[in-house]
Amino acid sequence: MRQIELQRLKREILVYLIKAFYSGNFAENVRLIPYDMRPKGSPVPFRCCIHKERAILRLRTMSGLGLAIEDDNERAELSTYAAQALARTRNAENPLTVLQSACQGCAESFIHVTDLCQNCVAKSCINSCKFGAIKTVRGRAAIDNAKCKKCRMCIKACPYQAIVKTIVPCENACPTGAIAKDSNGLACIDTKKCISCGRCVVACPFGAIHNKSQIIDVLKKIREGKKVIALLAPAMLGQMPCTAGQLHSALKKSGFALVYEVAQGAEITARTEAQDLAERLQSGAAFMTTSCCSAYNELVKKHLPEMRPFVSHTKTPLYYTAEIVRREQPEAVNVFISPCLSKFAEAQQNSNIDHVLTFEEIGALFVALNIEPEELPEENFAHYSAREARGFPLSGGVAKSVQAAWTGDPAAVKPALLNGLNKTTLNELRAYARQGQCPAGNLLEVMCCEGGCAHGPAVLNAERSAAAQIEKYALAAESLRQ
Image (cartoon, rainbow, N blue to C red; front, side, top):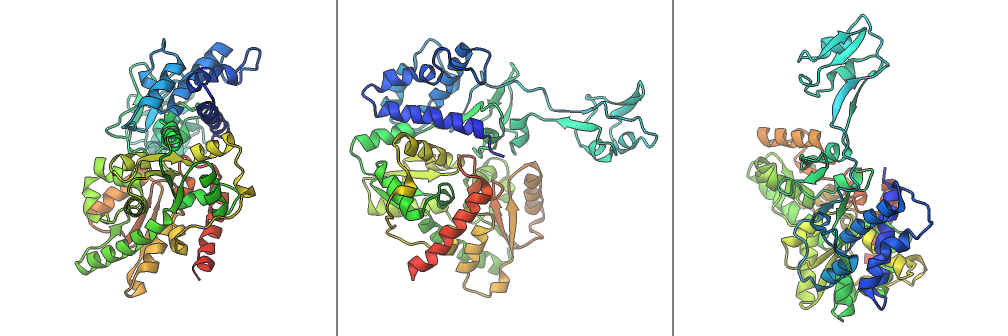
């Protein structure tokens, strides 16, 4: 479930920032954002007082400016940070930043027995524990957390569901243990472990984790008259109640000179992965994983090197699309429109990608500029991508696209899906690498986000609705190519 209130708050700040950029005095209007959002006498929805509310909004605005909240000098005005955002020439190295003032310092994760315990004769919880961590105290079960290994066997064993595990949402969501408490009990990200999957961003109910936006960098280059090109991820077509042609028009109206479908690159990815799979199977390999998910690629690089021999050598759809655009428009500024935060890391490693904007940021841009995509005329893409390529953002879509590009015996391809990276599926991947095979098939599609890119950490629409719209977008490709 998306944190709707947090999405609304984040978008509101971005809208204020974009309007400030197009105003006559960017720095001053940025300084006033916390006061404009919470004027004197207005209700305080989240904090103890309006002063704390404004202080938190100030820090949230920093991330909208693309700055690390951790680097805040509390004496500095937002106008100073606005000037820094306009002056910078390089993107932030790490995409995530933590607003510790919003972090609640959640209690440590632990398993405990609630008042529902009936002190039953069966003692199922005690008998299930292999570590001797449970015993009866004063007529009810009690857990010794010094001995408890959090295996959850007692939770499964209790017939009354009287034993529960409390979690820290961000830590529980992170598949790699990259986020944990610092010495003050507040969230802190270890960038050496982080794969920029964005799960912590979605999981935190206080909105304490942000991405450092590049919206000001992009708007600055548009205003400077540079040819800024949008590389549109196919998942974006599941985000707004409009057609692909209308979204194309909306992006052009907001300042982009041209719009390229990243599904164009997905066609190349599918063909190349099909060839890669054929070569591997011929050489005796038992299976191959796909390589289009940036977060999965970062996972393999940082945490799962034993899986590297089984990952396709094929590049991502974004890689191939950016290569095409750079060849055709060598002086242009390439901006990827993304549902994903791990694409910030991919862009850092590819000189053909200049900036990344999320779907949330594009949505805020349309709101700030009063652009209603569904009211605009159709404007067709120069290249019409295949149906399968447009289906890449859905779970199973990559495997289907590779199958469609397969030129050999169709029965030779046995697709399998790993739909979402978490601690359990990470262990599954380790087992596949150790055994040298994947029991479920020989083409393993790995998606970090459950449901695929259509359910990424920076999307606007609910998964089911987004998937239905993407299916229509994919079906439309057939008639366009005829």
